[in-house]
Length: 320
Ligand code: ATP
Image (tube, rainbow, N blue to C red; front, side, top):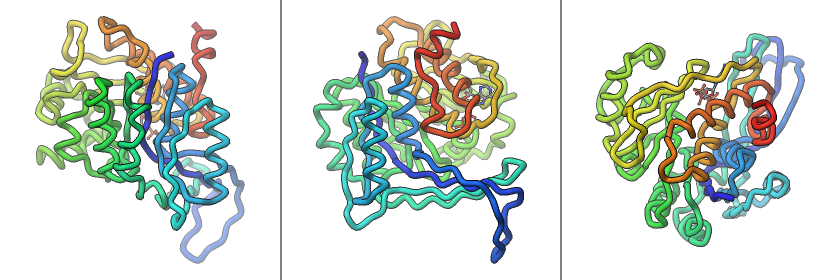
């Protein structure tokens, strides 16, 4: 099996569904569903279920939620490396969803924000056998940078999923990442931050390939940029650092899906892309890994939830 190391957040999601979002001071009846989440854990589960031997490096509190995280990681076959912060709670997200699917969310990062670069660097054995390292921006920026640097030192591919959009990427992150996997909003936020270019994220799916490619090359000259476009699939712009397969900019359509909940589709995509790239031979077309990720992500939209809604490689193989 190929090795993927994911460095990122673990959250316990608390999801209440009610007909109408309550106004301040109001009380409403609803239904409740809880489950594990956090972009880091979602992507680690995606990578593991997509067939990669997966290590997940995160920060946890010294609480019952952390104990639950360890049980879940074991059940998924994930090698969990958690830095325990006794004075902090494990990350949580409170999510209220109304009948039309609109939501309001409060995230308490807790121990995620305290994940240290030193703890990340200490996992040298995991990085040493990694083919791909995958990080997001829900943990401390120095821990993210340590993960990307460790990938480089180990000769592994460094993938940065620059999410959420309001968490800043740094020039140093963009300089060392081999692959970036923003959605449209995250891509627009990076362009504004690094290039001073204001683009409407809703226009990106219809943007001509050459124009989108030029924006990607200006933003991150070295990295291959894969912009996920929801039901429109993904756009790929190859940089200097990675094998291409002829075309330097192209689109991969989404796999048709009977989508019921697209929460975590981006996490499914990044985790599956990491797994596919980790098992790919050096001359395999990058587009094959992107096609696998779009298939995997489309299946994840056909059930409710985030981490536990990830499909398994066996399901994808069975469905052809
Ligand atoms: P989220 O924030 O909800 O986790 P995202 O905005 O980061 O998602 P998207 O671009 O919406 O990520 O989706 C990621 C990938 O999932 C897409 O590139 C596509 O392959 C797949 N996908 C998303 N929505 C659909 C859909 N309705 N039908 C089929 N595939 C989908």
